Length: 358
Ligand SMILES: Cc1cc2nc3c(=O)[nH]c(=O)nc-3n(C[C@H](O)[C@H](O)[C@H](O)COP(=O)(O)O)c2cc1C
Image (tube, rainbow, N blue to C red):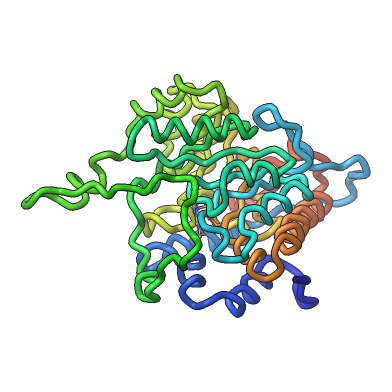
């Protein structure tokens, strides 16, 4: 697979992926919850923020390095946990993990990976974290954590915003089902909790085993790895995460895939950043498609960012090469933006770099 010559940015990969993927897989990957207001709003919120550049600054010693939870990283672009990557390419997570390593990007593996934890670990020479969904029992949950620990994953990212599936209408209309041969190979088959007659399918059924803050505290006591929560939008939850002693927060609305009409992470970031005040790292995802988006997130208090769908678009278009190219494009765009704003390092990117109308 080679990179099509007309690709200049991430949106070009999106266009190619739509052509390359079966319509049902496209609906699953591109789609979002209900009327998809949140998914559209994620990108729109970045477009509406304006940058205030600086000229005539010497940036000849510039770089994008940072330290994040024990890792020295070359740049702040992480690959978000994305389920079932074999939908986009036969090598799935093995390809994206290898691409992440080649481009010095930290890789986050989904619980719903279509490749085994151990195989991905062998493919990813660079830093990698494991994204955890709580399983049917504490034992099964711990089994996943232990496998991640033994395979060299260096943090656990618990996703907390999707205890039940979002109402993904586009996906439902398309009739999407996982094709034969693609499944969540690391998970025991999930038993769907049933409700009794007269009870709510949601409250007494699906949510009856959903994790709470107590489970997060329990998990913290079970692993020595840094523990992050992913899917925080409400500043009250961010404060709770810090008070619980967690090691980081991923501010995310799941790319608009769980609850429609949530605000975008970039909109809530200033308030969360104010409350957290540098105590623990803040990572932002949902709608990052440009180096300028990364710059804006860092200006408002993020330490790093993650990309989700762009991994699948790149995989579908050009496999591992596409993912590596996607990371490189974003990094180049970030460096360019920093240079044109007189920022030599990530810590030079502050709110002063954004235009704030009086
Ligand atoms: C197809 C798909 C599958 C996803 N699977 C997971 C998952 O298994 N676990 C998780 O925490 N987030 C999952 N996400 C959410 C991403 O981690 C991330 O939050 C989101 O994609 C970021 O938004 P973006 O796609 O606009 O970059 C998934 C997203 C997509 C598009």
